[in-house]
Length: 182
Image 1 (cartoon, rainbow, N blue to C red):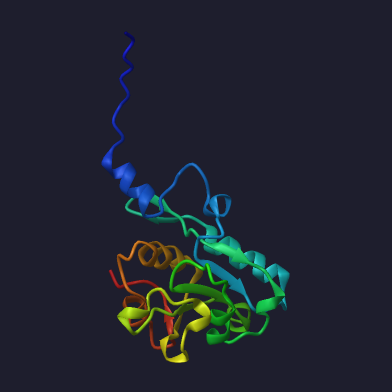
Image 2: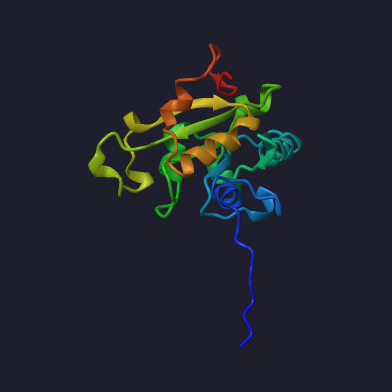
């Protein structure tokens, strides 16, 4: 009998992979339609859209590790010019999750490229099985975040480590989330 011994996987590696730290591939390479969406609603500049995608996809450093935003980029004119509630209503019925990100006119025009984060978590605990198209306007919340912060927002919301309000309540006076104070 031939027994092969394999080294155990360090717990830090397992945790890092679970929360968005993957050294083997970039988030853009691993992007899946089931990941939270980054939706383009402004089509005034392909170059700016490309730059913003790159900024969101860039690895973020924390504690000597690289972390990535696992998002799916949507470049469809069907979303052109839509307001937050209309974006939510336009998501497919099978959209997984209660948040998405939008690259709109403000994102393109502002040199910091603040991304619009849209949360649409049900205010009623019995509504967690509702479709995006059934979202009432009162359940739609927004804030803006720098592209470098999308990774932390996506990773924490995707694993329910934090709530949308944790980020929304931490924006600066101009309404932009630039990270939590250290």
